[in-house]
Amino acid sequence: MGRWTGLAVAVAVLGLHGPASADDVQVNGTLRDGGDHKVLHVWGTHIEMGYAHGYLLADEVMALAEGYILPMYGVSPDQYETLLSVVLPTFEEHKRLLDTGVNLQFDHFGREVSYSDVAPAQELPNDAQRIGYINRLVDEGYARQILMSHDTPTKDRLTVWGGPGYGHILHSIVPRMKIKGIADEHIRAILVENPARILQFAEPG
Image (cartoon, rainbow, N blue to C red; front, side, top):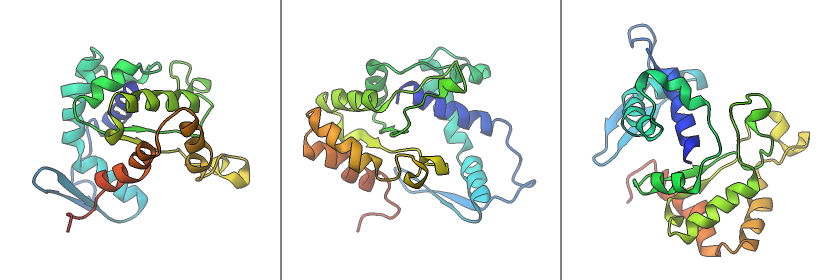
C-alpha cells in the first residue's frame, strides 16, 4: 500500500531491531525452505507466536526494509523512525510496489477515523479512497495482486458496540465497489481467489 507498506515494515523493523537471542527467550517456531518460498510454523500463546514470527523472520524483514522500502523513501537504515511520519500514498506508489511482483493489501476498511487524531504526523485513507485506489489499480490490470481486510482489534469495532463489524466489507463495501464499476470477476478475485492462492498453508495437491 505504498507508504502504508513502508509504515508496517517500519513498525516491524523497530520491533525487531536488536532482538533478544534465542538463548534468552524460547522461540516457539520453525522456518524452513519450501523452494520458491519459506514456510513459517509457530505455536504457543499469542505472545509466544508473535515473538517467534518476528524473531524467525527478522532477516527477511530487515532485507526488505533496507533493500527496498527505505531506499524508496530516501531513508537510511539508521532513520527508521522517519517512516512513521507518513502521508496518504499516491497511485504511482501503489503501482511501483505492484510492479515488483508483490501483493498489495488494503487494510482498515470500516475505519473512517484517521490515526492523525492521535498521531498528527500520520494519516489514513477512508473507505471511499480505498475503493478508489482499488478501482484504478484494477483498471490497470492488477486485480490478481490485490487483497482487502478490515481492522477489528477492539470491541468498539464490533456491531454490538456500534462498530462496522466483521461483515463490513461484504455488506457495505462490495455494493459500493459494484457501483463504482468494479466487475464481479475482479471482486471475486480480490476477496476469494487471491487470498486462497496467497495464503496456502499446504502444497497444492
